[in-house]
Length: 295
Image (cartoon, rainbow, N blue to C red; front, side, top):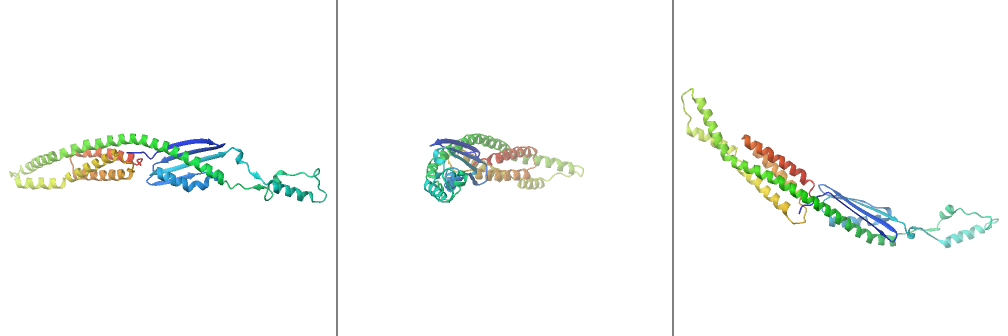
């Protein structure tokens, strides 16, 4: 089953006054790599989220962005009332200071040691972990759904280009015996023309030897067979229902197909075969472009 490496999924939720938004993007990449963007309050979840992503997505450049805002009363810092009362008692013990005469700068008071109780955030983190993991699963489902839909388009395109190659390769395979016969006829005509002035005739054994050398030099049966085998394996892979990534295998097959096509083109000087090879190489190049985005 072909899946694209390009996808997007997002989801959000409001839980106990806290807002969560999770966004997952994926782009094509030769390997699997992740980039995770978290608010400071959720940094402790980075390794856990990276592991969760790796279980859902096999290949591509993945960017996970999580936004978090706590608008509930839980977001407020806690004050140490005992510490504040102690500071007030200490101030009132200063000679000349009274309740009526004393003005308190709240900013300065909050800056005093022990007045604000630091929030470790452990309870909030535990709640966020449950919500974020659920939202991450939902966002990944949307992303994978998009990758599957794009994979169906890629599947159609790859089959189209494969069929083009098969059609032209069939003509090439049928053309080879005809090409040898045409070469023999042209060679016979040229030798007859060259020997006409001397009155000599073309010896059949010389003609057969030259044709045999040409046939050996231009024999492309092995290359055609290998290219047909690559096409069969290519079709089998893109029609497979397996969930395993196949993008790199398809890319390798495309390179091998191009190598065989180049060899055929260099060994055969027939105009029709050369024209067909140009079409085959063009289709292979389009396959190479498409498989760069296959997972």
